[in-house]
Image (cartoon, rainbow, N blue to C red):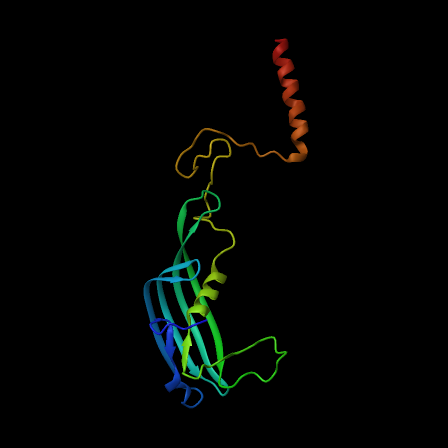
Length: 183
């Protein structure tokens, strides 16, 4: 991955990294819109990144909020989903000695610039809900005509029938039809 020199999410922490452990600095982020390749757009990204020096490296702690546009899985209408992006990542001064360590720390680049773009993208994707709903009370689409039931009542009624009882309902309907035919 190549770092773009004009990347607004690339922080110079070289001056902080030379300080004693416990030193920290907070960076405020405010972006009206950001695009993350290949398919993530964040709007109104706001929050702060705190960079603190530890004995082993530099810790980046993020508390961010943003919005992204999703499509509701019930009514198929686009809506804005608010995301709360929180992360803590360690950038070590030296490479990890343990090759089999499951929790790999990232190494602080020699130039002292940390690229937050992949971190923010990954943690934003993790905050997107699996089930995209514009609201908890979304009525969805009519299974008969496809009308959006949030905007109109198309008049079609859905009967919630247990599939195990469908045959019994069919027999009852046939019986009712026979009785109507006798009258």
